[in-house]
Image 1 (cartoon, one colour):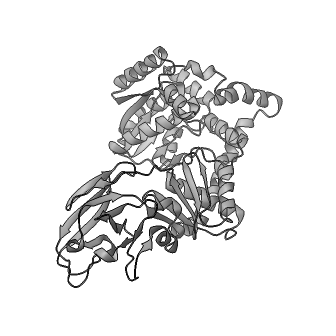
Image 2 (cartoon, helix red, strand yellow):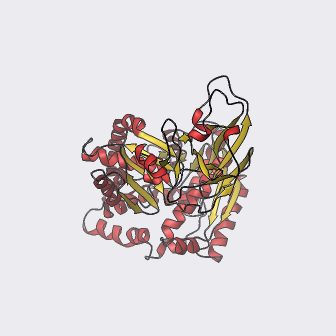
Image 3 (tube, one colour):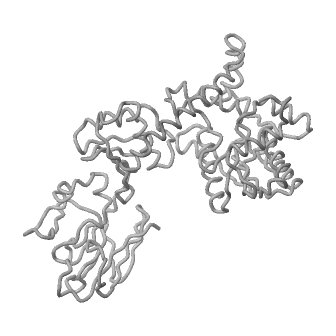
Length: 458
């Protein structure tokens, strides 16, 4: 950016347009009190009237530096008051969370900040959440991703816009921001932890980058930023290439289990990795803790027998008949829960509500696998999950069938089998969670009253 041709404010406004911000937008700003976020706060405030923006600031007291963190919160709240900008403060003990989950302070802070701010932005219906990442942050991110062996996506760095998150300072280097703050005499606070080299990003920022720029290339950071921009264009092209294939192959099987239809060697390795990576992102909503080694493990499992599994970071990957399934580790409920007709039960570990209703026979258009003949059901009624030796009377077949054999015949992934709720009457399975109804409870021409079973997320 050439500040001689365009003012700082003009370039910032141009970046907002690049991020897709429209007049009248509701903007939630993440402001720490540091130089970058304070510059963003005051720039937004200057443009508020001309663009008709509604602004609100959110600040996280992470309790890493205690008294100093309290002063940061007070400082941001004071300046929001001066600018007549609403202020929302969150408290969260990041060190305790990091220790409990065995992750770094940096990772914990990033995770909690985005979780709290994202949930608040959604609840308050903000159009955008603005973060004050700079070109220096971009260079550091690309370098860190390169060091951990990231692919093209990781080397694309941070985008100006991802979903509702925008970064309008991403084209500015920190020295330009400091110049703007000094010229406009805007205050800011310095986070003392930014000088602690035990944090990886600080080590890169304060020691490694200066050394590389001095000894090798003074435009080292600028080159990393340029590389990110190039890779972002290529990443966009690849995304457009695989998206139509992915949409047709990605399925939600129910009860927290997802499946991707894909065969080993069906795509070139580059596209195969992208399909699998996109699969995790679609199911998990993020790629935190997912590295190249996990993607390669998924590629290996495509050549394995159906039912082969591996586990990482509480994610279970399973080879299925059609491709791969993904689910979270799951603790099966061992006890049976009494059910009344009509009535409902909340299943805590899968967070859904099981409901039974008595209804007259519809004229048409009902799904038979979710309806039972009320008069053919004998109490007591229970909801439970599968147990060793389970069997039921499969419709259209004589005698009893083992539940395990039914699951195998229907090619139901192992990850799904323990999650499927079973409705029993008089100690016999009469309904298999949306898949089948026992011959003993099947509706027929003599049926007069129906039991409708439904599941809904709590």
